[in-house]
Image (tube, rainbow, N blue to C red):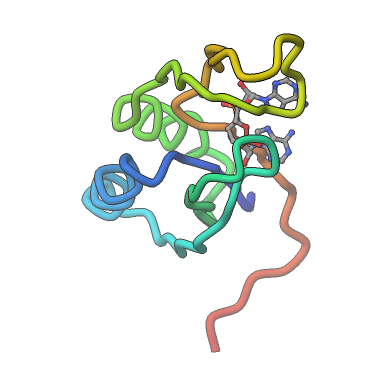
Length: 104
Ligand code: 2BA
């Protein structure tokens, strides 16, 4: 069993959770904030069998869109005040081994 932790953009979170549920996954959505842009995003927790992980990643990939955000005053700005483009991926996904899973 694996726990998949997927950070998605706020605007994609409904589409992603909807697609996951439609494909039979159980998902918990936690509201979160990116440390770099300090904008709202959503962290999804999905517990699933090992054999389901690859199709889960495909569902997430198909339901979200990478974007370029124009930001000012980011921590890595070299020219203060000039907007810079930051590439935000559709999703950042972590796959973690689960030692024990029970639904009581
Ligand atoms: P943020 O931390 O707000 O980062 C938004 C975007 O800013 C990132 O997109 C990346 O393009 C850029 N960025 C982030 N940290 C940077 C840095 N130290 N230097 C230069 N550019 C930086 P993504 O990589 O697609 O990440 C989207 C969101 O996913 C992040 O929002 C964060 O909430 C989460 N995330 C990404 N990688 C993570 C990681 N290794 N651990 C935990 N959360 C992560």
